[in-house]
Length: 404
Image 1 (cartoon, helix red, strand yellow):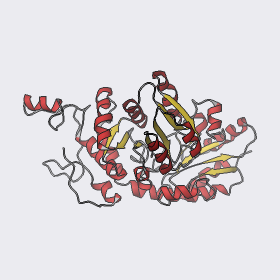
Image 2 (image 1 turned 90 degrees about the horizontal axis):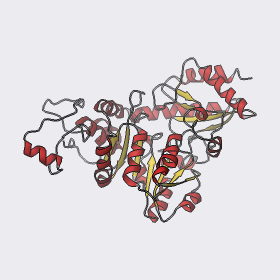
Image 3 (image 1 turned 135 degrees about the horizontal axis):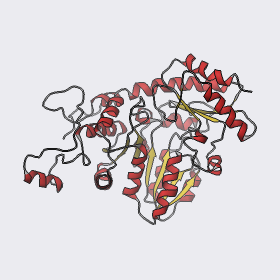
Image 4 (image 1 turned 90 degrees about the vertical axis):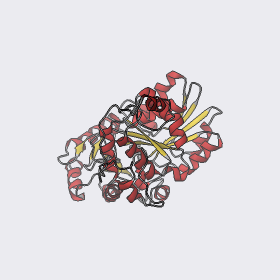
């Protein structure tokens, strides 16, 4: 099914509500939700050609769906890539990327600050199949360069990171990767294409957990890989067809609708996060605030260049404490005192969500791994939603002001 024809040079906000497949014969204005697992063929000969890849057309839900294609077209348009492959979750997108591009004996370089499940998947699960990996500090370009080997095939970075909001230099990493004949993949979940388009800085692949800001209201699981048409069709598509890591049409439709308000949400939530981060810096119980929009952030200038002058909607803060045990108890006290905001490990919702990374997203890492990544027991992550700022502050104060 062809993409709806539009003029060149449209802005991101327009693409976010218009990029999709052609309307059906019914002329629907809102993109249709096609709930079907199979497709009736016009003839046996046509069916044979479609299964052989000689003729365009849908054959089976695992191989394609018009609603899923609309979501893929829209996200590719927002990221500035030729194509996109939707998957059932963010982690399945990483799985698909690795299965499609790597084999036994290949080497991957990843940031030690990446999402805990990503570190486990590449460092442990793929290691069982002979894929080697090196873990390096997120912001140390010399360490990335030193980790390169003749068999390095992929560099994978997340920027900003979860949960410390560390920012890497995408253009510099692209130079390192391409000089060695490797690819650069960037996890763009935290910034989204509303704030950052990694391909403009040289990235080859942009990975998303659509569960986060692309949906924007915490409703569905989804993932995606944005890349060149050749990579999507020749590398990702064959593996996806055989593995079944597909996105359901309903979830694709929800994300498709979420993308329409992505720019508005990201700008509003980033503005709230900026104010909240500045306010938290002044509280006596807070030791440090991690947020790219703050001048105190180590990569503040870089973040402003890469992210359009905004810091995103996620911040974290360390509580003042002595021992690790005390830090954990103080963090739990703040979280248990919440009456308005949600204690929830997700992010990207219109509702503000808080979590304790050391016991949730990074809970399966060893203490040494957490310490290396800078994730202490007193760290609290805040994914800022769209509530009124004063209500967010008041809810945090229920715990911050009663710490002992």
